[in-house]
Image (cartoon, rainbow over all chains, first blue to last red; front, top):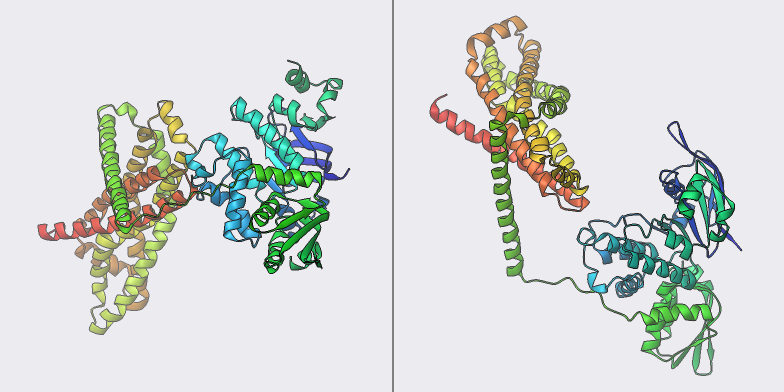
Length: 243
Length: 367
């Protein structure tokens, strides 16, 4: 099986605070991979390093076969067209409505006709569980859950091979959260997506993730499927999984 | 792109049917080229699309394939189970057109904009009313007065602005002196440059320049700050915790600016006159001593006082407009920029109108 992401000896330093001290992990193709750990352990930072929003202090991160710590401008652009990122609070462009938000990458990167783009937007909206009649609403007019769904629809707009989700179910009601999990599983199966997600939601950890890594105290304390979690012991693992 | 797509498709004829053989990925990148190829085969009786060598099919391509199947006689061949699922997925989400933004008539639009303007005026009146009530509250209960915030804002808007205000005023003094020196020399009226500079700078130019610099500097900062606080719900948080934004944000800024502006005008007076004095010395051979002697004998102190009195008026206009604009910021990032621009333009305009009123009133009073 191909490795989509490979993290090698990554060290992250902010000022004089060491966040990661030698992380190693890999994500296989078609996998739903989780990054877990206590608040402030640097899960989101690691994900931001993968999508080139933060710099690593030392070490390498390979995404879709390319080393993002040493990469040319052209390769960066190709990479960015091949992944989708869902931010924790959606990060929709506030001056565009939902439809325009989703259509933005399509308009920018493809030569598709506007009627085709509109059909794709309508499809993506329905895929993530939004109604096309909401397409003209602006981000300030919709709820947090809808923002998340719209953000996911935007991340899926280009049918990426790789999807990064930052706490996709936080702030959603339990029903929407389970629907979101089901949606992620369905998309993975149908579109052969590889998904990397940060999550605190025990249900989605059990229900969706094939494997995950637990970052605690600057190191990875566990990497593997949910079934093997009882083999390790740390403060976080004991509290989070056994209570 | 074209090359990639060329590789991705092979077309040949089989009986009366055209066969399109898809190679590699049929996804959003290769789709435009694929669409072009199928359009060329528009009049074909039967289209067979062979997916034997396809490695990837995404939802956008599936959407187009279904659309094609609706329009004409198309057969899919060797469609793998995984790709069939993608097509099923797209098929099961029925096409629903996006709603169109409603097109309204000219009259409707005019009415809408008029209504918005009306709302704007009402909101402004409400703001001024609330400001008045809050000021009265502070006047009656001085314990609500926030000395610390006022001092902080004075530091921000006056102390840190001294350099730029002095420099601008100095340069204006230089320019005015330079231009008039040429004219005055013609008539041998060199010494009158003191009268001219003294009155114009103390009475009009220094207050105006200071107000314009401060409108651009502090006014824009107030709007952007308060606008951002509104978007991040900081203002709402303050309200729920019982910290009235008027006491913590609005009134300290207005009072701070009302104190700052006269100080800055005083500094602008000095810098402007100094600039003029320098040019009088180099161009018209008027020594500093002579200049100052003439200055104290011909320039009434009333000119200085009038300039200073304008300060708090200008400050009130700049601060109120800037803060009001900050409160007007909506929930999107663009409106911060829009309101900041409006805040600066409107406050400079208001300052000039106020200055004109001063001129009319003072002239009629004979001062």
